[in-house]
Length: 185
Image (cartoon, rainbow, N blue to C red; front, side, top):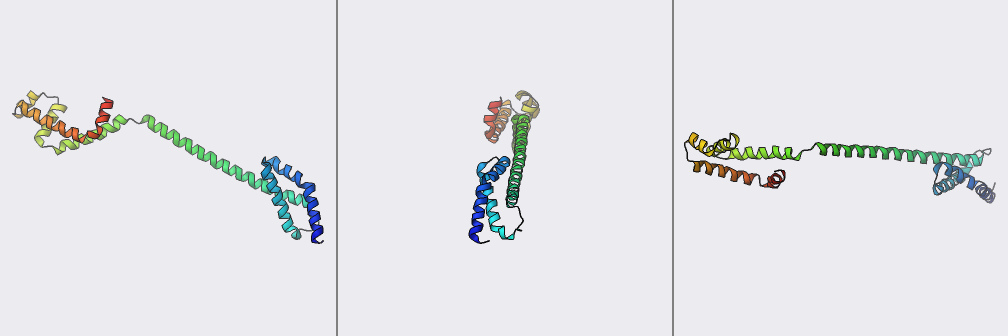
């Protein structure tokens, strides 16, 4: 068969079956543009490989098989994309739930309290032992200035001096926490 006859036969095949091929593909793909593309691609594949087919090959069935495989590949790809999207969404939902749960149990006051206590301890350690001892007696042991003065054999003004010296050092050390302290107090 010469090329002109082959071309006429192909054009006849195209006009006779194109709309049926497109309907077939569209019934699965549900996208007319993609169904048309698959039909054209299948017809082109047939045309390019027509000399390798046996003479008794049912050409419309052959082209329909190509379209079927294109549709299957497309649908499997869509399914894979959907599966991955669902996994991503599931992971995103889990991550969001975890962030919500973590934030619900988070107690900023406790976090700041532990940090502030560490700063207080460090600041007290940096003070002279007499100043530290007086402050601990005043604030942690709830002793009055008069009791401390009598125990250490110093004046109450001396106790006040050491306590105010410690408070000043703590105020400097805790300057970044003052807004938080004011918020919680």
